[in-house]
Length: 67
Picture 1 (tube, one colour):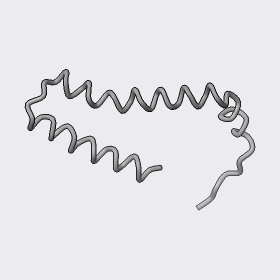
Picture 2: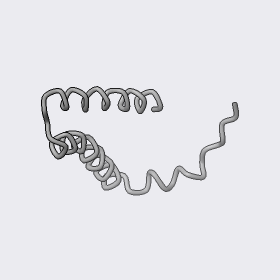
Picture 3: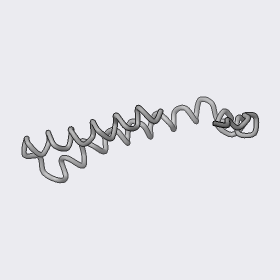
Picture 4: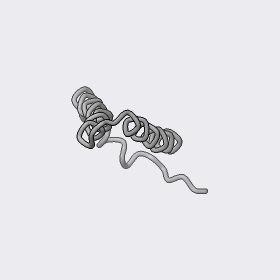
């Protein structure tokens, strides 16, 4: 998951640079970038609606991992 997050951070920078190169306004750039957050919010809300207890019930059942 950390690798995917890092990829998103790098890809987001390239996306903003490309949109700036294409003369998008600040509002346009923000709208394009906000779409990813909107999609992930909808996905998380849908997951919670389908499996409402899965996030809560697994909290105490895992053992800590040591390095």
